[in-house]
Amino acid sequence: MKPHFYKVNALPGESYTALHLESRNFGSIWHYHPELELHYTVKGHGMRFIGDNVSTFKSGEVIFLGENLPHSWQCQKEYYDEDPQASVEAVVVQFLPDCMGKEIFSLPEAYLLPRLFEKAKMGMVIQGSAGEALRELMPAAVHATDLERLVILLKMLSILSTTDEYEHITSPYAFYRTDEIETMQLSEIYNYTLAHFKEDISLEDVAALRNLTVTSFCRYFKMMTNKSYYDLLIEIRISHACRLLVENRYPTESLCFECGFRNVSNFYRHFKRITGMTPLEYKKTFTAGGKCPENGPSTRSGATLPPGISKGYRSR
Image (tube, rainbow, N blue to C red; front, side, top):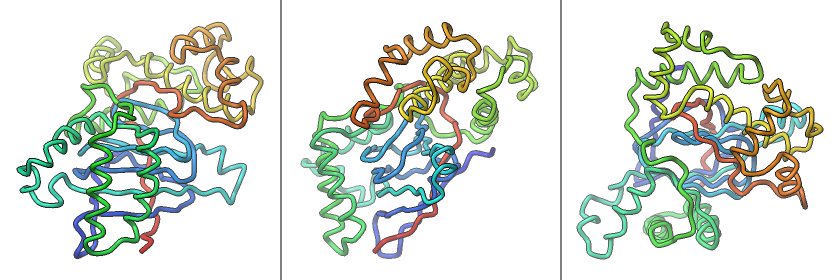
């Protein structure tokens, strides 16, 4: 799949975009754009792919992304297969760093903005009272007009720049301006892995996608992603296992085979190493009272996994 540069189109007379999106799912397009993005998932769950991070997402999550940070949200296919009426909903605010004019950065009161935009390059999951405040302000931005739109944007930036209630999403090296050829090559590898992770994948199979020897491919993948290909494959399988555990659809002992593992003990070993819990501990923690992981099982993968843009609609 060719990586997608997404053109964010603000309406005439608007300095930034605020959208209320509602759709069957969030699509399947891996994309990036120069605008920073605030993303509030009102309804829905699945996997999110941001920079070099793969994690589950759920309703209520608020994320702030820096400029040109590749991202997408992919909903669980099983969710829609079982419920034809299922849908997702999100509020998205997108703006260029200088949307209120370059002069703002010279104002003494705005000294925190460059620091915020630098932190956003690694992606931020906003939590606690800051998340609560943003969940109120973001829908208000969709409906606001005139100066009130700018007031709301400044309020959101004030919250983001002063809060310590956040967690970074990507590793420090994950930010880059996407090189289309490089991204397209990695995208092909990730697409293949996502489509076949339940099967036995050999290094020969994946190396053939790039017409490389196994040795050359391993060296290339390590250089581009700072991990081995098998690390990525295991992390994707474990992320899928975490979702199945939360959904409670399979007995714990047989679930591993649904995720591409062929050996139960091997599955348990990798699961404990990545999540810090046994599958049973994870299931008890996140199914008690219907709870799901706050940010999902965080796993590191490369920066070009392909999932989601929704066409949605503009609610104004």
